[in-house]
Length: 96
Image (cartoon, rainbow, N blue to C red; front, side, top):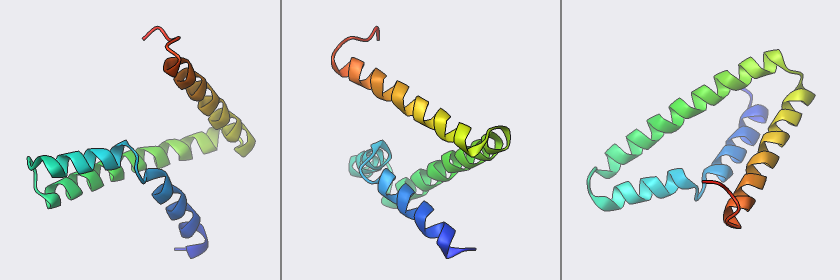
């Protein structure tokens, strides 16, 4: 395993996950007392593992189908569309 590849991926995912809905859900489940801290940790870890596996497999498939430039363009367009939608939603201009 190459540390040169591991460190930037770990750093990006770790920073992206801090304070997101996953973390807030884990806090709420832990605070509710409906499950032990160990149960919440294991369930959240397995969920993150499963969603990451799907992302990696999907990314590998897309990487075989698209060029790196095409993949970056697609990712950028998706972020722009979602960002625009969330701005419209915040302004109350969406249909949902």
